[in-house]
Length: 198
Image 1 (cartoon, one colour):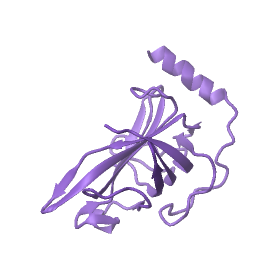
Image 2 (cartoon, helix red, strand yellow):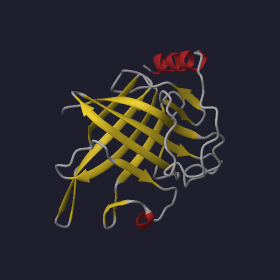
Image 3 (cartoon, helix red, strand yellow):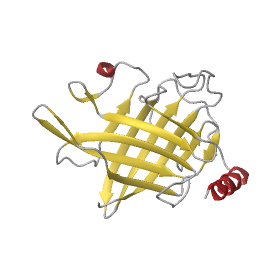
């Protein structure tokens, strides 16, 4: 299985890739995502997603308020179990609300109270994560700061359109990794996500 992942990663690296040429904004939560096909990069390993899915995430109750959780998964492979490269974003909305037309933002700050909130003490963006399984790289909002603007369009059947501008600036360290990151990580562009009915 590991050898297959390494081969897939090598093939992906060799494929022609248009590349996200411009520099990332200082705050991607304020910027509209470029109108381009979705591109992603995990610490410099770039990929064009082959699968974008929207499924249910963790539902949350805060006091008397209930929230539905959703997870957007951007993958380099159609293999749902263990794609070589993957980005995930978790968001919440008030119970029963649709994601259609919703805009979610995350600021590159540690203080939760400075984030856009669904309710007091509860950010609308619950988290994000990125993985490069062949290299063993795995990191998330726990280790690094990121800014993001995620906009959903209108759901049509079992798909929903959207745009994303997720930016994890290089030069960051964490409790687990003392060497500053050398490359930006990101997910940028427009997408059509398959809605998982489960």
